[in-house]
Image 1 (cartoon, rainbow, N blue to C red):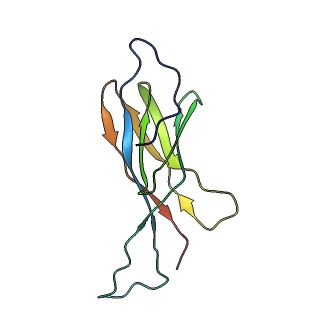
Image 2: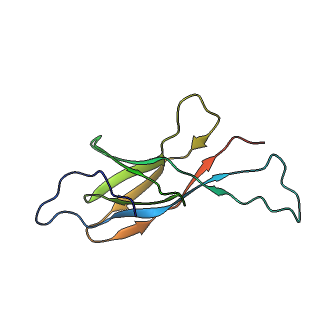
Length: 113
């Protein structure tokens, strides 16, 4: 699993955070009955931004999975999309509590229509 680039922790460091998978879709220009077009794993950076502006980044694995350990608090989590591309990602608010990993799957819109 990928490692989080979080703040250095010592005794009592947070063990909570978010864990999930990022997928991208649609993956076909036209979806038709009997011809599935499932979302694909998305690889890139997932960022959690705290209320105070601190950011915590992690890179997804080849399956789009990520795990991000965070201090307690409120965050906005999103997949970082390279500038200039057609892809978009919706930021998701989440509250992290000590010792609790929250499941949070994210979707990236590929812009294919």
